[in-house]
Length: 224
Image (cartoon, rainbow, N blue to C red; front, side, top):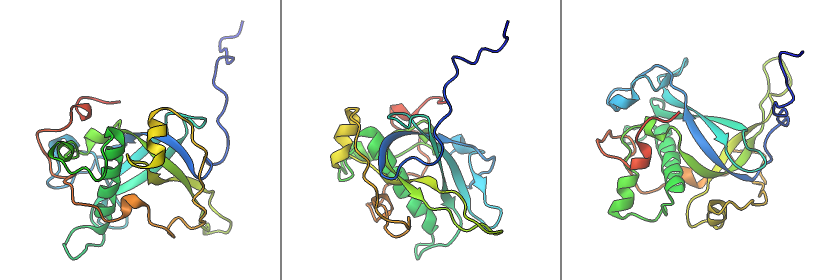
């Protein structure tokens, strides 16, 4: 008699990357790194990671696709919170990019129009901590980052990246909210830096970093 019945195990996932231009929903998971940032919320103690080559401290995030034919596939992205090059305002340039991404992700998750600057919507974008985004679910378009040259020759494999956060007001958003499958729309560029995603472009300043005692109810509580 067999001790280990493998018949009910899931089939192995497909090799390679998720096709360029795929629309899907992601669930965000923050992988704590044990480092701290001065002035951060008490809830964020031990949340950050530290670069081995600079003064950058960042959030290490893992994203899991939770719908569609590629459900279960994962993407990863680091978000600089402090350190690195600073702008004329004395603030990390990379933090501004991270902040815009978080803004778009929250808008997508909460069905907030990016143009909605009402007090109610602004309150929902004012997070009590970075850790409160753990478990956030939002809609995206997936792209492909081409693998660079390896030191010993050859190329690193291609990998997926978040090309664009889909927010209310965009034609795909309502369809995705309704659970409709959308035909992939490839970005038609080999260079992921060639075009700046809208969530990296200038947007009205919204405080996503200052610790507060209040925050949207869906962001509170323990999330796995």
